[in-house]
Length: 105
Image 1 (cartoon, one colour):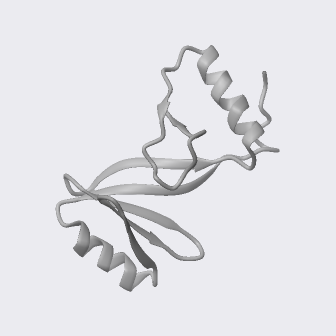
Image 2 (image 1 turned 135 degrees about the vertical axis):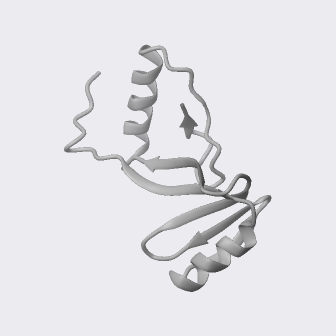
C-alpha cells in the first residue's frame, strides 16, 4: 500500500502544550492571537480561524502532542493499516478534538 504524500498531504491540525499555569498561558494566547477559549475537562482549548491549541497543566515549555489531520477517512485508514503492518503499536488519540477513529503512536 503506497500513499502519495504530495497528492494527499497530512496537515498539522493542533498542538497541546503543558504549562505550570495553564490559565495564564491560555489568557496570553487568547489576548495576543485573538483566540476564543473553552474548557474540555482538564484541557483549555483555544481557537481562531487559522489555528487550534490545547493547554494542560504540567511541566512548562513541554509539547504534549502534535495532532495531524488527513483529508479524508480513507487516507487515515490506509495510514493506520500501513503503520500496523510495520509493527507500530497504535494507541487511542489523546486529543478530545478528534473522533474515535483517531490514533497515536
